[in-house]
Amino acid sequence: MRIKNLIIAAVVMAALIGGYFLVRALTKTEAPPPAPAGDMMIADDDPSKIKEIKYTLNGEMIALRFDDILYKWQYTEDPSFPVKFELPASMASAISKIKANRLVEETKENFAEYGLASPYLDITAVFEDAERNYKIGDYNKMLDGYYFNIGGTDKVYIIPTGLNPFFEYSLLDLADVDIPPVLDEDKYNSIEMTFAAELIDSEKTAELVTAFSDIVRGGLATVGYISPGSTAEASMTAYGFDRGATVDIACKEAQTVENADNSGQTSSYTSTVHVDKTASFTVGVVDGSGYFTCGSGLVYSADAEAAKTVLSVLGVEY
Image (cartoon, rainbow, N blue to C red):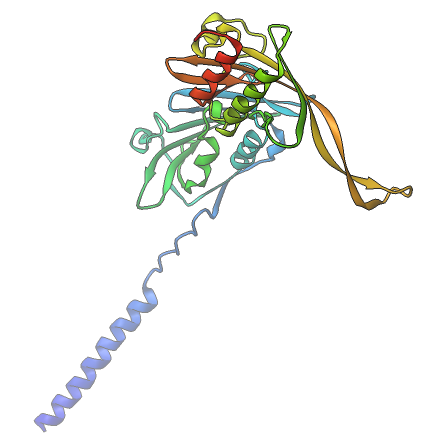
């Protein structure tokens, strides 16, 4: 009898325990699944309506505006600065469509804690009919994103890291660099050089061809900018350009063209034509470092020995 009672008690206990877990499972509040990264749309605008972009990075404020007539982006402070079109265009696209990982809170009381009081990036986009400000604050390693706020709201979001790189350009990073000729390549011939309004003889021209080619092959590392036509002595002296070592170049460039038959269809053969080209190099040396500019006003670092060769051939002291 005792064993029978124990068995009955065990069965009842098992039923009670099972019922407890069944009721708990039925009444348990399910936590909502986390939103996928970048799944919350918080800005959805037309990038073509953005006419100005201003951003501050590491204390440097850069303002760009779109010229509808010239159909190009310009540096607001100096429209002559050559801006590479693709970079501000990509900024406009990036800031128009923004997705957040999550909403952190809806008050600005803790902006300082998130780095939004002194943001890493402060961006303003001027649309045709509105102006919006965006702040990117500190990085949250655990959530792999940055704290973010859209001006006019108190909301703090976490956004993916993908937005930042579009605005991490200094002014010189935005430059549309020159494409100077590498004169010792076979496609260039009939090269004539002029210095101080005088034609340079063939022997010196050959030396300069080699030196200028070495300078260009060294790469176009942008180090500064001087507005075309500027005679600001400080700017010219900083790169050694005040010595007037400017060489004007005229040459012919061989170009391959496809030929068309009488019907306008492209034929199977090509021909070479020689096109007149011009270039201009200004070279300077300061404290052992070489510099050159070649038309746009952008200043590039130059191989110091090649720059010294140019100055020596021209008879310019450095």
